[in-house]
Amino acid sequence: MKTTHDFVAERALANHCPQLLENPDKGEERRAATASFLTAACHAIPDRLQPLLLAKRPVVEAGEAETQTAASLMRSIGSEAANFAVDMGPAMPRMLVSIDLATAVSLTDRLFGGDGKTNGEVPASLPLSASLALERVVLAVSESFITAARIERQEPDIVCESDIARLAPFPRGEYCVSWTFKVTQEGSDVWSMQIALLESDLGKFSGSATKEAVVQTATDGEDPSGLGSFGLIPLPLIAVLAELKLPLDRLSSLAAGDILPLAPARSIPLQLGSRTIARGAIGTLDERVALQLS
Image 1 (cartoon, rainbow, N blue to C red):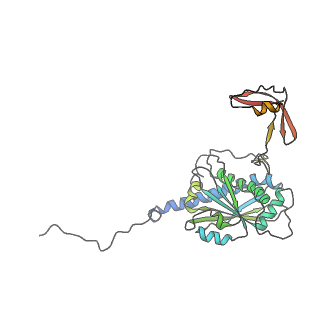
Image 2 (spheres, one colour):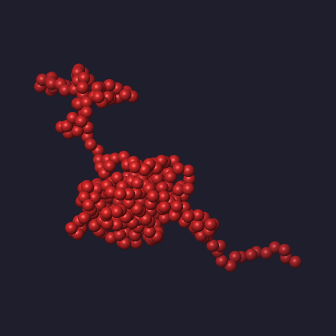
Image 3 (cartoon, rainbow, N blue to C red):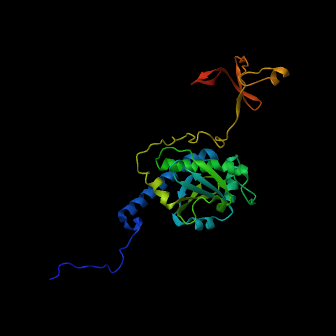
Protein backbone atom coordinates (compact mmCIF):
# COMPACT_ATOMS: atom_id res chain seq x y z
CA MET A 1 0.00 0.00 0.00
CA LYS A 2 1.41 3.37 -1.02
CA THR A 3 1.30 5.77 1.90
CA THR A 4 2.71 8.84 0.18
CA HIS A 5 0.91 10.84 -2.47
CA ASP A 6 1.61 13.98 -4.43
CA PHE A 7 -1.42 16.26 -4.32
CA VAL A 8 -1.91 19.08 -6.81
CA ALA A 9 -4.35 21.89 -6.16
CA GLU A 10 -7.04 22.26 -8.81
CA ARG A 11 -6.73 26.06 -8.64
CA ALA A 12 -4.72 28.74 -6.90
CA LEU A 13 -5.80 29.74 -3.43
CA ALA A 14 -7.80 32.96 -3.27
CA ASN A 15 -5.87 35.99 -2.11
CA HIS A 16 -8.61 38.16 -0.63
CA CYS A 17 -8.08 41.77 0.32
CA PRO A 18 -8.20 42.70 4.03
CA GLN A 19 -11.60 44.38 3.56
CA LEU A 20 -13.18 41.03 2.55
CA LEU A 21 -11.46 39.07 5.30
CA GLU A 22 -12.37 41.40 8.15
CA ASN A 23 -14.99 40.50 10.71
CA PRO A 24 -18.47 41.62 9.55
CA ASP A 25 -19.09 42.93 13.05
CA LYS A 26 -16.28 45.44 12.55
CA GLY A 27 -18.11 46.91 9.58
CA GLU A 28 -21.18 47.42 11.76
CA GLU A 29 -19.02 48.98 14.46
CA ARG A 30 -17.51 51.32 11.88
CA ARG A 31 -20.93 52.42 10.67
CA ALA A 32 -22.06 53.05 14.24
CA ALA A 33 -18.89 55.03 14.99
CA THR A 34 -19.37 57.10 11.83
CA ALA A 35 -22.99 57.85 12.73
CA SER A 36 -21.89 58.89 16.23
CA PHE A 37 -19.19 61.13 14.78
CA LEU A 38 -21.62 62.83 12.36
CA THR A 39 -24.09 63.46 15.18
CA ALA A 40 -21.33 65.05 17.26
CA ALA A 41 -20.22 67.16 14.29
CA CYS A 42 -23.77 68.41 13.69
CA HIS A 43 -23.89 69.53 17.32
CA ALA A 44 -20.45 71.17 17.24
CA ILE A 45 -20.76 73.10 13.97
CA PRO A 46 -23.60 75.45 15.10
CA ASP A 47 -21.60 76.69 18.10
CA ARG A 48 -18.86 77.89 15.77
CA LEU A 49 -21.07 79.17 12.96
CA GLN A 50 -23.38 81.28 15.11
CA PRO A 51 -20.82 83.99 16.01
CA LEU A 52 -19.86 84.30 12.34
CA LEU A 53 -23.37 84.54 10.89
CA LEU A 54 -24.66 86.92 13.60
CA ALA A 55 -28.06 85.32 14.10
CA LYS A 56 -29.77 82.67 16.17
CA ARG A 57 -28.10 79.32 16.65
CA PRO A 58 -28.36 77.32 13.41
CA VAL A 59 -29.44 73.70 13.07
CA VAL A 60 -27.12 71.44 11.07
CA GLU A 61 -28.15 68.10 9.55
CA ALA A 62 -26.00 65.61 7.64
CA GLY A 63 -27.44 63.77 4.66
CA GLU A 64 -26.79 60.18 3.63
CA ALA A 65 -23.20 59.25 2.84
CA GLU A 66 -22.25 58.84 -0.82
CA THR A 67 -19.27 56.75 -1.86
CA GLN A 68 -17.61 57.37 -5.22
CA THR A 69 -14.22 57.86 -6.78
CA ALA A 70 -12.55 61.24 -6.47
CA ALA A 71 -12.87 61.70 -10.23
CA SER A 72 -16.63 61.13 -10.03
CA LEU A 73 -16.89 63.46 -7.04
CA MET A 74 -15.10 66.25 -8.90
CA ARG A 75 -17.38 65.83 -11.92
CA SER A 76 -20.46 66.07 -9.71
CA ILE A 77 -19.19 69.28 -8.08
CA GLY A 78 -18.56 70.93 -11.43
CA SER A 79 -17.04 74.35 -12.02
CA GLU A 80 -19.50 76.64 -10.22
CA ALA A 81 -18.42 76.09 -6.63
CA ALA A 82 -16.08 77.45 -4.00
CA ASN A 83 -13.84 74.53 -3.03
CA PHE A 84 -11.64 74.41 0.05
CA ALA A 85 -9.03 71.71 0.63
CA VAL A 86 -8.39 71.49 4.36
CA ASP A 87 -5.27 69.74 5.66
CA MET A 88 -6.30 68.92 9.19
CA GLY A 89 -2.80 68.74 10.64
CA PRO A 90 0.11 66.32 10.97
CA ALA A 91 -0.97 62.68 10.56
CA MET A 92 -4.52 63.85 9.94
CA PRO A 93 -6.51 63.49 6.71
CA ARG A 94 -7.44 66.06 4.11
CA MET A 95 -11.02 67.25 3.95
CA LEU A 96 -12.85 68.90 1.06
CA VAL A 97 -15.53 71.53 1.72
CA SER A 98 -17.49 72.61 -1.34
CA ILE A 99 -20.07 75.42 -1.45
CA ASP A 100 -21.89 76.41 -4.62
CA LEU A 101 -21.06 79.93 -5.82
CA ALA A 102 -24.55 81.36 -5.25
CA THR A 103 -24.45 80.23 -1.62
CA ALA A 104 -20.86 81.45 -1.28
CA VAL A 105 -21.87 84.96 -2.39
CA SER A 106 -24.82 84.97 0.01
CA LEU A 107 -22.68 83.77 2.94
CA THR A 108 -20.06 86.41 2.19
CA ASP A 109 -22.72 89.11 2.42
CA ARG A 110 -23.86 87.73 5.77
CA LEU A 111 -20.29 87.57 7.09
CA PHE A 112 -19.99 91.29 6.38
CA GLY A 113 -23.21 92.02 8.27
CA GLY A 114 -25.72 91.80 5.40
CA ASP A 115 -28.89 89.74 5.16
CA GLY A 116 -27.53 87.38 2.50
CA LYS A 117 -29.96 88.55 -0.15
CA THR A 118 -28.36 88.83 -3.59
CA ASN A 119 -29.50 90.02 -7.00
CA GLY A 120 -29.16 86.52 -8.41
CA GLU A 121 -25.96 87.22 -10.31
CA VAL A 122 -23.35 84.50 -9.80
CA PRO A 123 -19.70 85.32 -10.55
CA ALA A 124 -17.67 83.02 -12.79
CA SER A 125 -15.19 82.54 -9.95
CA LEU A 126 -15.06 83.47 -6.29
CA PRO A 127 -13.54 86.91 -5.57
CA LEU A 128 -10.52 86.90 -3.28
CA SER A 129 -12.36 88.89 -0.61
CA ALA A 130 -15.13 86.29 -0.57
CA SER A 131 -12.73 83.36 -0.35
CA LEU A 132 -10.90 84.98 2.58
CA ALA A 133 -14.20 85.56 4.38
CA LEU A 134 -15.46 82.03 3.70
CA GLU A 135 -12.26 80.55 5.08
CA ARG A 136 -13.67 81.52 8.50
CA VAL A 137 -16.70 79.30 7.84
CA VAL A 138 -14.51 76.45 6.61
CA LEU A 139 -12.21 76.83 9.61
CA ALA A 140 -15.23 76.65 11.92
CA VAL A 141 -16.39 73.45 10.21
CA SER A 142 -12.97 71.79 10.30
CA GLU A 143 -12.49 72.67 13.98
CA SER A 144 -15.94 71.21 14.66
CA PHE A 145 -14.84 67.96 13.03
CA ILE A 146 -11.76 67.91 15.24
CA THR A 147 -13.94 68.50 18.30
CA ALA A 148 -16.43 65.82 17.24
CA ALA A 149 -13.63 63.31 16.73
CA ARG A 150 -12.28 64.08 20.21
CA ILE A 151 -8.73 64.41 19.00
CA GLU A 152 -6.01 66.84 19.96
CA ARG A 153 -6.62 70.30 18.59
CA GLN A 154 -4.88 70.93 15.27
CA GLU A 155 -4.36 74.08 13.20
CA PRO A 156 -5.90 73.34 9.79
CA ASP A 157 -4.29 74.62 6.59
CA ILE A 158 -6.87 75.81 4.04
CA VAL A 159 -6.48 76.25 0.27
CA CYS A 160 -9.30 77.73 -1.84
CA GLU A 161 -9.82 77.10 -5.56
CA SER A 162 -12.92 77.48 -7.73
CA ASP A 163 -11.51 74.99 -10.25
CA ILE A 164 -11.90 71.63 -8.51
CA ALA A 165 -9.70 69.92 -11.10
CA ARG A 166 -6.86 72.33 -10.38
CA LEU A 167 -7.34 71.91 -6.64
CA ALA A 168 -7.24 68.10 -7.00
CA PRO A 169 -8.02 67.41 -3.34
CA PHE A 170 -7.74 63.62 -3.67
CA PRO A 171 -6.12 61.12 -6.08
CA ARG A 172 -8.65 60.61 -8.87
CA GLY A 173 -8.83 56.83 -8.50
CA GLU A 174 -9.30 56.78 -4.73
CA TYR A 175 -12.74 56.28 -3.21
CA CYS A 176 -14.26 59.15 -1.23
CA VAL A 177 -17.14 59.45 1.21
CA SER A 178 -19.15 62.67 1.04
CA TRP A 179 -22.12 64.16 2.87
CA THR A 180 -24.33 67.16 2.24
CA PHE A 181 -24.67 69.24 5.40
CA LYS A 182 -27.82 71.37 5.48
CA VAL A 183 -27.76 74.51 7.63
CA THR A 184 -31.06 76.01 8.80
CA GLN A 185 -31.15 79.33 10.64
CA GLU A 186 -34.22 81.31 11.61
CA GLY A 187 -34.71 84.35 9.41
CA SER A 188 -32.31 83.15 6.71
CA ASP A 189 -32.50 80.88 3.70
CA VAL A 190 -31.46 77.26 4.13
CA TRP A 191 -28.04 76.59 2.64
CA SER A 192 -25.84 73.54 2.28
CA MET A 193 -22.24 72.49 1.82
CA GLN A 194 -20.69 69.25 0.68
CA ILE A 195 -17.94 67.70 2.77
CA ALA A 196 -15.80 64.80 1.59
CA LEU A 197 -13.01 62.61 2.94
CA LEU A 198 -11.06 59.72 1.53
CA GLU A 199 -12.83 56.52 2.52
CA SER A 200 -9.56 55.18 3.90
CA ASP A 201 -9.25 58.24 6.18
CA LEU A 202 -12.74 58.06 7.67
CA GLY A 203 -11.57 55.88 10.55
CA LYS A 204 -9.18 58.62 11.70
CA PHE A 205 -12.27 60.63 12.62
CA SER A 206 -14.96 58.10 13.46
CA GLY A 207 -12.52 55.63 15.03
CA SER A 208 -11.40 58.16 17.60
CA ALA A 209 -14.86 59.53 18.29
CA THR A 210 -15.47 56.87 20.92
CA LYS A 211 -12.25 57.61 22.82
CA GLU A 212 -12.01 59.79 25.90
CA ALA A 213 -12.18 63.47 25.03
CA VAL A 214 -8.91 65.35 24.99
CA VAL A 215 -10.36 68.67 23.89
CA GLN A 216 -12.89 70.93 25.55
CA THR A 217 -16.03 72.03 23.76
CA ALA A 218 -17.17 75.61 23.90
CA THR A 219 -19.55 76.59 26.67
CA ASP A 220 -22.94 78.07 25.91
CA GLY A 221 -22.92 81.78 25.24
CA GLU A 222 -19.22 81.96 24.36
CA ASP A 223 -17.71 82.64 20.95
CA PRO A 224 -15.91 79.32 20.35
CA SER A 225 -13.67 80.83 17.74
CA GLY A 226 -12.80 83.67 20.09
CA LEU A 227 -11.90 85.70 17.04
CA GLY A 228 -14.99 86.89 15.24
CA SER A 229 -15.34 86.97 11.49
CA PHE A 230 -11.86 88.24 10.74
CA GLY A 231 -9.93 87.00 13.73
CA LEU A 232 -7.19 85.32 11.73
CA ILE A 233 -6.35 88.30 9.53
CA PRO A 234 -2.84 89.40 10.64
CA LEU A 235 -2.52 93.07 11.57
CA PRO A 236 1.00 94.55 11.66
CA LEU A 237 1.68 96.32 14.96
CA ILE A 238 4.74 98.57 15.20
CA ALA A 239 6.51 99.54 18.42
CA VAL A 240 8.83 102.51 17.84
CA LEU A 241 11.55 101.85 20.42
CA ALA A 242 13.82 104.74 19.52
CA GLU A 243 14.51 107.36 16.88
CA LEU A 244 17.89 108.88 16.09
CA LYS A 245 19.43 111.23 13.57
CA LEU A 246 22.79 110.67 11.88
CA PRO A 247 24.71 113.08 9.67
CA LEU A 248 25.22 111.93 6.10
CA ASP A 249 28.97 111.39 6.46
CA ARG A 250 28.42 109.16 9.53
CA LEU A 251 25.66 107.27 7.75
CA SER A 252 27.86 106.62 4.72
CA SER A 253 30.67 105.29 6.89
CA LEU A 254 28.59 102.73 8.81
CA ALA A 255 30.17 99.28 8.92
CA ALA A 256 29.45 95.94 10.52
CA GLY A 257 30.33 96.01 14.21
CA ASP A 258 29.60 99.70 14.73
CA ILE A 259 27.61 100.49 17.86
CA LEU A 260 24.90 103.12 17.81
CA PRO A 261 23.71 104.31 21.24
CA LEU A 262 19.94 104.41 21.64
CA ALA A 263 17.85 106.25 24.19
CA PRO A 264 14.42 104.53 24.33
CA ALA A 265 11.53 106.69 25.39
CA ARG A 266 9.87 106.06 28.74
CA SER A 267 6.53 105.49 27.02
CA ILE A 268 6.79 103.44 23.82
CA PRO A 269 3.88 103.84 21.36
CA LEU A 270 2.34 100.68 19.89
CA GLN A 271 0.89 101.61 16.52
CA LEU A 272 -1.45 100.10 13.96
CA GLY A 273 -0.56 102.02 10.84
CA SER A 274 -0.47 105.66 11.89
CA ARG A 275 -2.81 105.14 14.85
CA THR A 276 -1.44 104.63 18.35
CA ILE A 277 -3.52 101.97 20.09
CA ALA A 278 -1.48 101.57 23.29
CA ARG A 279 1.67 102.63 25.12
CA GLY A 280 4.06 100.73 27.29
CA ALA A 281 7.45 100.50 28.97
CA ILE A 282 10.32 98.62 27.37
CA GLY A 283 11.84 95.63 29.15
CA THR A 284 12.82 92.00 28.62
CA LEU A 285 11.00 88.68 28.79
CA ASP A 286 12.67 85.30 28.24
CA GLU A 287 15.79 87.06 26.93
CA ARG A 288 13.75 89.03 24.42
CA VAL A 289 12.86 92.68 24.19
CA ALA A 290 9.31 93.10 25.51
CA LEU A 291 6.75 95.85 25.92
CA GLN A 292 4.65 96.07 29.09
CA LEU A 293 1.48 97.92 28.18
CA SER A 294 0.40 100.73 30.45
